[in-house]
Image 1 (tube, rainbow, N blue to C red):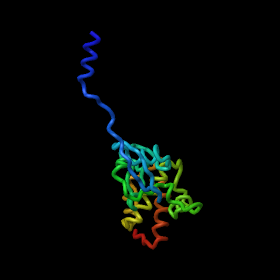
Image 2 (image 1 turned 90 degrees about the horizontal axis):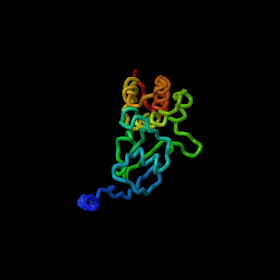
Image 3 (image 1 turned 60 degrees about the vertical axis):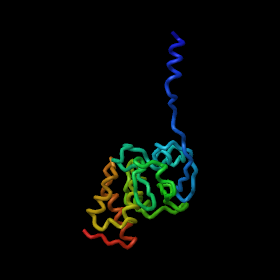
Image 4 (image 1 turned 180 degrees about the vertical axis):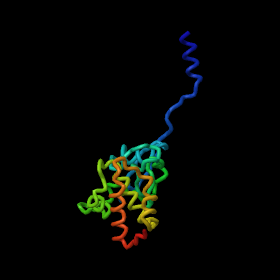
Length: 178
């Protein structure tokens, strides 16, 4: 009986994990070589392989915005992007915004306007705010609210977040039309 089971096991194809691939990601100005399975999300590559835990894992379905990072200056949900797809692109996480002890103006504005409470969503909110300004899309208060709507703050700091974004937008020469 055992021999029949063993023979049957030999007839089945061997199923294993697909091979990993070596990819190079340019994160916060540095190139990082990683050996990754093709299905690893950018979020998991950042957090689990590069130990950049500032980018948060929230819903893992692209609905909360906690995982927002900048890719070539545009904001994306890193949980919905495969790391292998971002090879050759310029990726910026919350860790890459400050220059030494000098915070990015958006980080400073968030602090000055008390635009964070528990802080879990803050890295994604800041990356999204920087992205919407660099994309040149936010010209009114309603546009800023709409463009930030993909970033959920469970503490409800939306009013302070809006004030921080408006301050940086205006400092960079933007004109807020109500």
